[in-house]
Length: 299
Ligand code: NAP
Image (cartoon, rainbow, N blue to C red; front, top):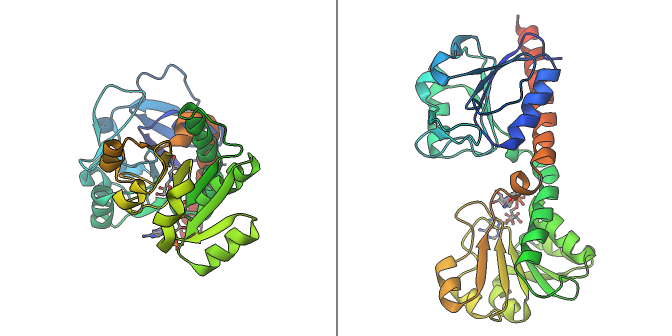
């Protein structure tokens, strides 16, 4: 239980509702900022404006997956009002207050460092990234189906990167009957790709390997699908770029050449917000419970 914990949940999308539901069930006291258009009421949760919050009593602040934008604004699909999260608010929090977000950016990192409050980026955790790869893959399949006139079964699919997302994408497209090749740079990844029954190739060979590809799915957050790489693809190739913004594809050149290339950020929140929210809610409730135990131990 999280009885006695005071938590502010600031902005977000449908994923936050699962977090609110879970923390409310665990008896935390919640201040909801940027949720005034939400009809549903949760026990122990109170809708407030950011200026009305008493930051000095907060044990935790939960931001949406992207955190803030570079001006400190927090997106909320449940509000028309602009919510800006600033270092001034953070300075008012007690020292033990922890801030949770999915990822960070230069703005959020700098106000966190100035305030000296602990910041947890949930998507840095392997467990969250691996669970989250499940709805990501389902969204990728949806996008491929929507943007091709051929089946995945029998298509040559290139997956770039064998990280948490790349591995799930490669395995699933293989199970759907795609002829999957995976590009990686480390020898251990190349060995793992072979062990999975897929065709490995070194990223040094990327350009050459693209000549017969029907679907190219990039998971590498670096400029990898460059103009020469796109130039060596057949014109019908579909590129889905899953890497975080701005992606790893030269979209300008793809458009110029007439190769369809789509940046597909935030798929879990789009295709399965409930499941994606539950993944975050489960991990957050455990982390908040640990935080509560640490605080009790220190008292
Ligand atoms: P990850 O586990 O860190 O995997 C990244 C992969 O990229 C690794 O195989 C890594 O290889 C490779 N890589 C990184 N930089 C490289 C470079 N400069 N050259 C060659 N290879 C490089 O990350 P992940 O969890 O799979 O996530 C991948 C991306 O997808 C991230 O940008 C993440 O934010 C994004 N994502 C998007 C969605 C969505 O809905 N679109 C959902 C979840 C995640 P090494 O191990 O050799 O470094």
